[in-house]
Image 1: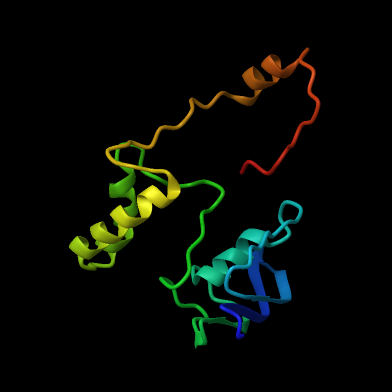
Image 2 (image 1 turned 45 degrees about the horizontal axis):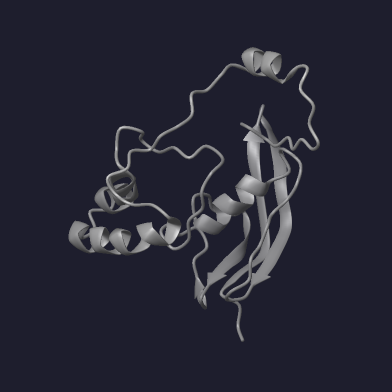
Amino acid sequence: MSPILEAVGLSKSFLQGGQTRLILEGASLSLNEGEFLSIIGSSGCGKSTFLELLAGVTRPDRGRIIYRGEDVTGKGGKLGYMPQDDLLFPWLSVRENALLPARVANKDIRSAKKRIDELLPVFGLSEPQKIRRPRRRNRTTGLRWIRGRRFRGLSVGDSR
């Protein structure tokens, strides 16, 4: 069985402070149909950059990305991912947020709505929901609340 997704020798660098900073070098993966992949690493190690390369948001300096046998290196619209900050519009419904890529790309809205309506229940979503976000507290308020409480386990992640 050939992999559904392959990354071969991906390298990416960025210009930072007038100097070239190497973010990824020789990153590769092979993912078969039905497999689940987690990318884990410390903050700033290149996880988001790797996902952006796979999704075609950023083009690699070197390497290739193959999806279902097709070279999709640097091509957007084939793969997607959910960034750490979701970038949804809270005044739009879930369906309208999901329609934005079709609208921007001038695609057929009727067929996009049909596909979205098929997929929303798969993710436990239904219309006409608005995106509801919890109120954000500043860190000081949050820390005051945490003080004095006992935790059996505490998981701290990157919250860029």
